[in-house]
Length: 96
Image (cartoon, rainbow, N blue to C red):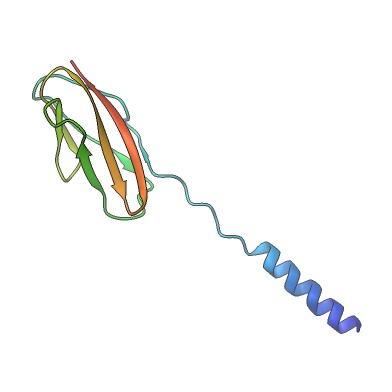
């Protein structure tokens, strides 16, 4: 009986200690851009779990390349959506 209790205690301890480490959230380090007409800046994304895609919600105000380079076009405000697998970040940008 003591061996059984000891074995169950060890198994419970091992199961309790085997937690998945929380991965850091994906984030854009330069999350507020002020760009002039035809000015560009590359988005810097940290903790990416895979390939990234970029999308401008209003490409008349600012466009974004597949590599994450944002180009200012006309005055206004838009959002750049950064996606990697199921993680999404809305990155806000303002043009002057």
